[in-house]
Image (tube, rainbow, N blue to C red; front, top):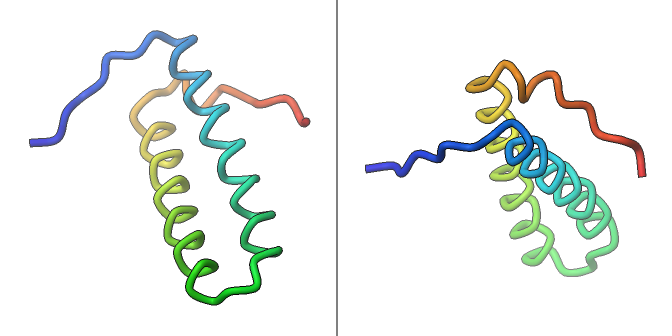
Length: 71
């Protein structure tokens, strides 16, 4: 059984922001990692983060409207 979360719009926006930031950080980590096994692990994590972002945006119309500020 998969747990469900009941999030407010502001909570959803925060979660999306955190996931976007993690995805950006992973991109940099992957580029700077010298070890192939660590790079592969980071790529798998990035895939999970991207999947979560996609599912959140599909499940909530408000989530797809959230635009993050560039940092």
